[in-house]
Image (cartoon, rainbow, N blue to C red):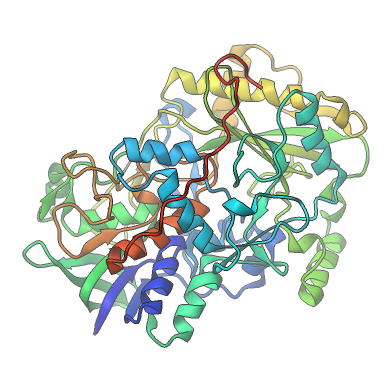
Length: 552
């Protein structure tokens, strides 16, 4: 089989590239192991906890025992479905802070500063403020990806935002606009009450063009001849097959599977490849290294009034929510319920926010477990810029084996100080007058846990991944041996081969990763096509004028 471009992975970035390449008139073949995304459990926003915990839609990856978390293994869900993780995620849309991308450029990813990437964010968006304010100069209105906001009708959402203001923090009507810092409404990748994944936004129109085909199979390696990519090999129904690319092969298989495929193809740390019986084509020690993620805690409160979403947490309530959504795409089922957010700085001297909040008017874990039977609410909180780094490595040369994933969470002393600070700052926010009509007692961590040692133990036992792995095929100057792709997303040392997804992030961004992953797919498309890049933006982001001396 022959095509112009082969894209490995129908995830956030892969779908975006499939659309842009077919839009330019090219034939594209997307090789994806996962199945379709038609299930109501995927399409209904409020059902978000189901697909990420289902073997049918999730690769089911877990970390190795984490040495700094008492040997706990943490879940690492990755989408095994059209749309990739955009079809199983929480639908939270966060671009990242402008300074994140300026730092990328400073780290060697030239051409990826905020002024470079903002036009691509605007190109990909079809943004609707839903009457909750925003910054039109920073937002796009004609892109494939629909972004909107929830109703915020639950009084707990506005109580959270008001409490932040009462605690002395700024408010912001658009954290994806000029000012990320502050409390305000949260953006969602939802359209007309349905999840708007990259498959909906990009892959479906690419398929309608007649120039894009999807092959269901497990990619085993990239076919490389004289250090030039010629196609990919894949398993399908027990048979090994090949698809040839006349132009390029593009890997967009996630921060976990992209380095795995490179290593299976002979690109990676030479000693590791030899150990696994793989011929070394390019010795690139950075493949699989630089693994980063966000961790978070659930700070949970019991409510003294029946104001939370718990009233639907029973068979009758869930049936009502589901039926209303099926019939009208409205009601609680039409929202991910992450409708209020905050980004704050942890202390004076921190230039831009390093703590993120997701507020939820229900006390529940991502796995659907409740800490109490009754009304409650919670804030997901965690530091954004941990110095801890991990790796992805091969378990064997068998493509069907899951890779080894070692995040090395909480390996820096500063990680512990940062999380203790997160707990204490959150307690302060929940103690504000805005929550007085609603708050009863603290469920988690619980009022009795106050000392550093007590909080450290709570963190060790309860911290969870926010499911934001990235960085394992780092982008930067090709002279740096730890970089894997150059600033045009070309794999260093192999022609006609690129990687474009969250794996190329030099450093994790300030927030959820779906938006920057799609942005990478958009910008990489222009590099692949050899097009002139979009003109740089002149917008200047807001930075707290007194950040050097004040925390809020």
